[in-house]
Length: 311
Image (cartoon, rainbow, N blue to C red; front, side, top):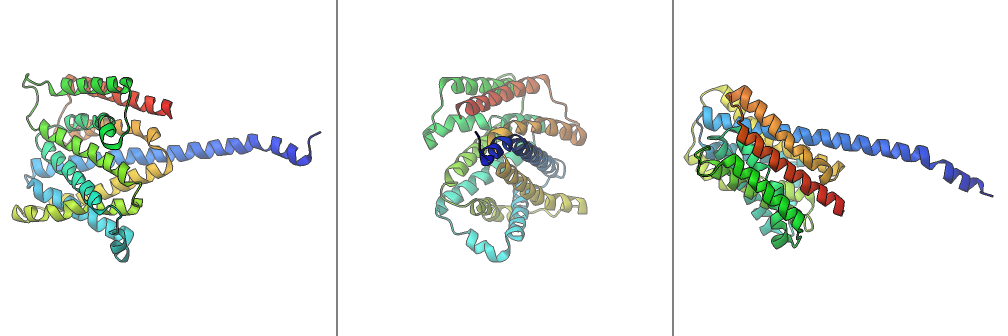
């Protein structure tokens, strides 16, 4: 016969496990909500940058620098001025600065791209980031992929060709900036993954905006143009706030739920960018962009499916 303790053990798991499943579901829903918030905030950041460099005609260097100034100020306020020195102590300082430089490259090239391109075009090219990460993870991180993933990557790049339409004169030459931003961001993700084994997360996040703050300063001050209205000042100040809040939401989401759960929701950016582009700038995505985006999103989701299946 079963003892009282054994009976208790056989009786308790059902309601206990149901509560665990409910709690886990709520955690994932909260993480998904945070991830969607991050994507929308980053879309607002790009739309703000496009307005400042395209409509208000401010120098790109000034816009980039003030974006990082705001991010640094937000980080100092968040971590506390006294803790800032401790957060600079890294076991891999060169790699931290290199990663921060990659973030600067992604931001600079992206701000240059949105000056000339529609938001839906830049975000579509950005969607190939997971494909580039998967392709470069082998030679850099020794995380090699199989032929199915290679086929998905090749299919995704066919979607990019559909968007760009090389030789047909269908898109602005500034798409090169968008590709450079995407490559920088993909390498930034790879270096983030590598450095996670050597430094705490808060140190890595504190280093993120420093390269942009320091390196762009002389160019920004040399090209400085005083904003013409209080609204332009507000938008410039909003850049750092949007960047800092977007990264914070992204971090919190990944602390609650694993990346494979959250990854598909990055594609909400296409909806957000399309709406912002239409409302603010009157841009309407064409069939090539929507078709190419569909192919890229399908390829990215297949890569995610393969990763989850292997795990």
